[in-house]
Length: 60
View (cartoon, rainbow, N blue to C red):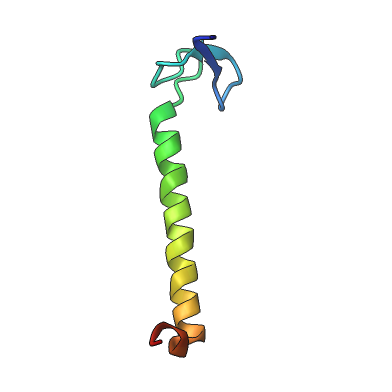
């Protein structure tokens, strides 16, 4: 099994355990946290929109 992965910022091969790309300096850990936060924010916004559109649905 390979112990390498590709940096999403510069596309160079780096160690799987790397938290910062040694070539471009991209913070690899923060990248995944940002994705999770964006996904959670989208779901929260959708829930708010749905609750305003159909408030009767939630009171069942």
